[in-house]
Length: 193
Image (cartoon, rainbow, N blue to C red):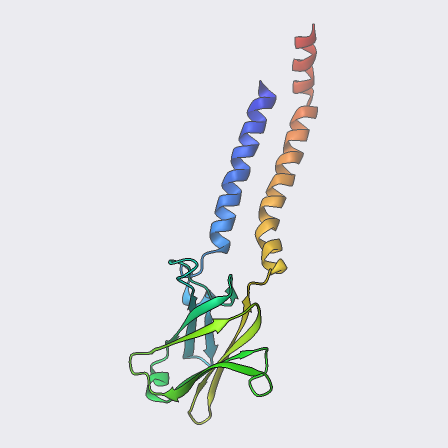
């Protein structure tokens, strides 16, 4: 009976730890601006934010640098810094990592965006892309975002799994210590007789 209760408590704690840890890992949009991985900053003030959407696959999906599927992708760049709204800003999406040497798949000419939002659409195949955002100022402002389309990111999988794995190992160790404790040993011996 004690063993069953320990196992149930351990399983409940593991489920709770997994739920809490996974919720924290996938909290894009629910984090402070300074901690948002989709935010890019130059200097003290100049900031932009990238969001990618694929409503044909997941209507409420909101992505940044890890795009889960191939196909039509809507890109939204928020010009957080007010000064960026007063200069021409353009967006270039390339297959690869080099703005000059790699194939451009989408180009939005530099223009003014007084509302602070740049919207574009592109078709992405599996692979690595880079989004370059350039503001025509003196000196020019330049941001970039790496995109991985339909690729497994083993680093993120490892990061997401390490917390629950540690919790499972600790619960196993705790359960083992309880099973080997003198009190449980005495209880087992008394039941046998």
